[in-house]
Image 1 (tube, rainbow, N blue to C red):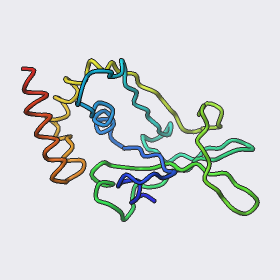
Image 2 (cartoon, one colour; image 1 turned 90 degrees about the vertical axis):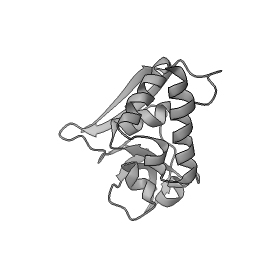
Image 3 (cartoon, rainbow, N blue to C red; image 1 turned 135 degrees about the horizontal axis):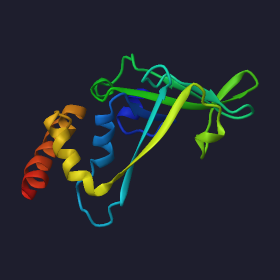
Image 4 (cartoon, rainbow, N blue to C red; image 1 turned 90 degrees about the horizontal axis):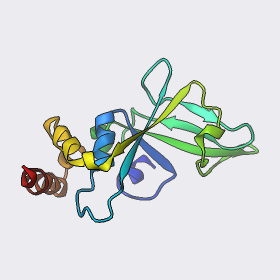
Length: 165
């Protein structure tokens, strides 16, 4: 399922990254047209109180449970380039588990000892964020490693960022 998720196939997995910088890249990645862009982007973070990791399991007493998967998986190289981990929501029915939808409100679940935060950033910061991330070599090419991603990275640098100097 991780391989499918990494290659654009719909899956019940929710993907996360261990890097706040990579999360910022994905939040601000769309540099196409600015018409209709959002006013803000959101970056969600999840970790335990003791550690900055995603290894959390939490559940609703009578409902679904959410478990983490990763990071050490043998799968697509993008998994490692993007420092991915995943969560999966499932519901137990008798002796079997079935995929379930994530609750609309995480706050309805007992998430101890996990800490969830939502960081709101104005979309107007896109150019500065992408410029700084590029200095850290966080680009489409470094995260996807394909020829198409190289072209995307060059286009962002040459047409979007340089064109605004």
